[in-house]
Length: 87
Image (tube, rainbow, N blue to C red; front, top):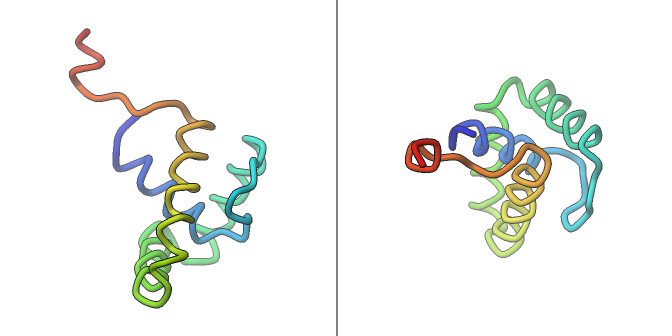
């Protein structure tokens, strides 16, 4: 999976209403990402929300982003690099 796609999905999940620490189903994750992208006006809006959260509350933003990235990797699979694909 491309790193940019993981980052975009994680930013959208970060901007979503799903609670940190939860273990949402794949369907819940997909719905939350789609809703956040719609509400934020696209993936750039989700990234702006993420940046604002880091500026305002970095002590809570970092754990939420770790959670969001972990959920994205769990639901959509591990990242693949060019080296991993060549092996």
